[in-house]
Image (cartoon, rainbow, N blue to C red; front, side, top):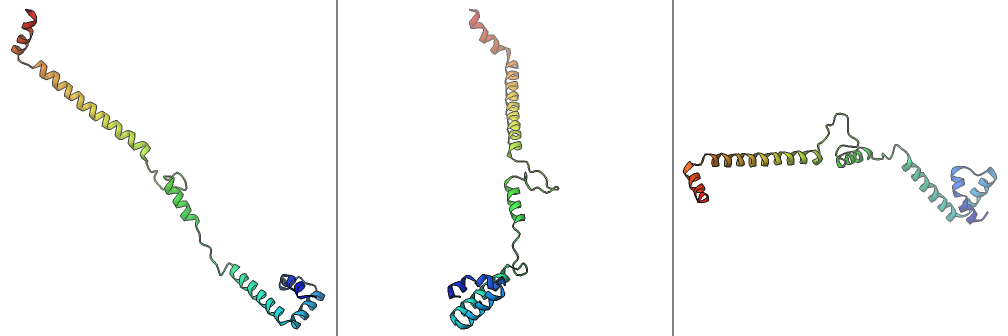
Length: 139
């Protein structure tokens, strides 16, 4: 077995997938070649450390779901991911027409009051002014 063939068998040797004959030849080659043995030891250390990193006890993945749902709920105005006790937020779609309608009613009320006041003032004008204004048309 050549050193290149042994390098190709590093993964199988580490996982224990080699048969007894090939494993004996692999170990004999490692015992003869110190550089190859050092490479294999580095390979083993690397994969063992990766195995420790991948264990669920060592790494806790952050739970991003609540924060993402909160952002979606805020941006959608409570339409999505709303809890059952949340009150529906009234957006500008309902309040703006209501404010505009009230403003129009106030303006109409003021205009109606102003017109009624002027009509009443013309009706209460002194009769002399009415007589004077009608006399030039009679002539």
